[in-house]
Length: 241
Image (cartoon, rainbow, N blue to C red; front, side, top):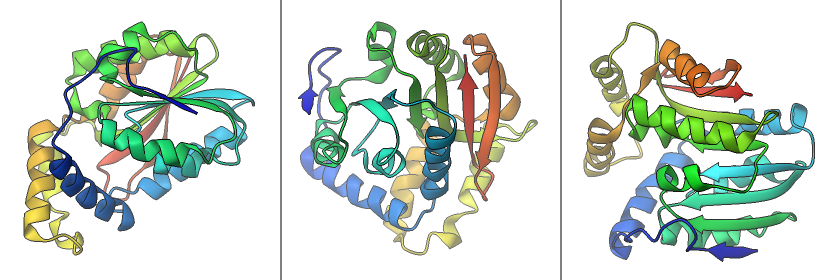
């Protein structure tokens, strides 16, 4: 496996101590399944094993440490894995996790919003898990258009992202997010405040209708919802060419 931190961009790295602190909070989120990662990645695995012909190329956008993606990929017909992320520290962890795959693989240190329009490696499946919601709708559309080109005529994009029922605005989604606090028992008040501050400043959910419209405007012919979290805060969509 090779880790290639050069081709698309060389972003400025966050402070190592800040990364470690944030990663510990993130892992507590995963361990307690507060965002229903297990169900989402289980759904992804079902798609990969039941609906995608092997061998397939898999592009993991904002892959982080890639541990959840490995839970979906190991034992499937994946023929090539590419992961991209802004954090070199996360990619260093991903490099160890990706060794579990037997296929060709590469990690790319880049800002995916800049890298995707220039991406040359075809992928049958492109995956984004809880990262696209950081962009406003026009930027989401441009990213999805780039992915449509990467996926070609037979590929697909799968996303697990912030989503609202039709008629709910961002304030309504954030109010429902805030209602989760009593259930996040493993988090101290300081940890919750850190996560909550990030969500309130950086999360921009779309309604179900808008997600579907963005998919069609990006050039995908079929859009389907595969999973909705029990909190109704997140949905997993499949966009097929």
